[in-house]
Length: 431
Image 1 (cartoon, helix red, strand yellow):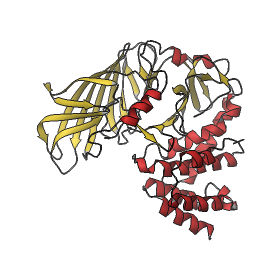
Image 2 (cartoon, one colour):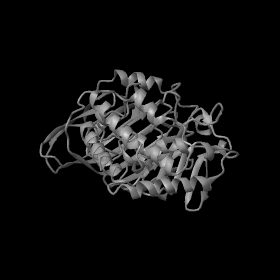
Image 3 (cartoon, helix red, strand yellow):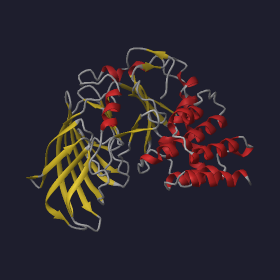
Image 4 (tube, helix red, strand yellow):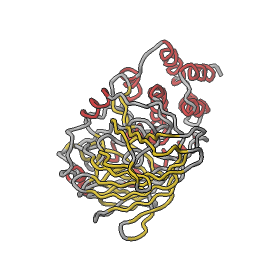
């Protein structure tokens, strides 16, 4: 979690959420997901989305009607379909071609009983009518909207919860529900405030287009400034403090360059829009939870209870690297709980390396803190840590383009584990 120098009562977006029923912080979500035992978590279904039409109306709480066209691309006939929808939304009805369908909503899971089996290659259109959303981590009301594509505010065919509890310290981890295949979306919003979205404006209150990262919708008391080829969007209360975009743009370009040149398997797009939004809370104890990539946009979450002073861009960049690296490398990989710590170790090591190459004053000690407090220790992990410490003492370890990092990242992408990493480190240390 990024911590700034000046603590005040609130930010503009936080003020604007006053009519939403807010939890004090993410503690209630942590308690909820500690107890959450989802049914059908291992349910196998092979579906694709073809068209998604969204009607969204922010009132005191969010009102939605979403039409989704689904294709069965698996071998089996399906009599039931399973979706993830954040549990604070209450589903009122689900229909297909005007016929109501029976459904069961249990936590983040929605199970739908079809009237007819869905054959291989067959399509079905589903209409979801639902409302709600109370958490202050995501919101949609008459004053402000924050609905990013990784959050299951649209029914998701990724049958996994919205959050999970991970690491030794039981931190709250956001599971990405981006749909990564190119799909046609249409968005209609009954709302008078300015909208930021990854779709194209069509006129009136309608946006549409093809996306391979789902749909993001944001609005609120925000200002924007353009610097060189980047646009910065931020809360209006930052106006007197925000400056120094040149340094920040240079930093983003360096991080982008390191990631895009260092990993041939990683598709990195240079951000054109950078959002600073109050979207993390005091109970967000995990590093790497605040920032997300949405094609040409980068969303940087800041704690809802702080604002920066005029030295903002001078002091938080080293900490931000630990948020940006996972945003690009692992956030959108298929989620496996047992891989979280393995992936996080890679992200911590590589973020620390980038900071050294950028000559940033990195006194966070995030890597050692992660190892000491959040990593589940075993004989395999101990062996890896011994090899890792030996590797980090070598001259080659300071080269972010050294093959060891791409090979390690490939292990991450392939879902490999500690034995393979141990072998990899031993190989490079002995060379």
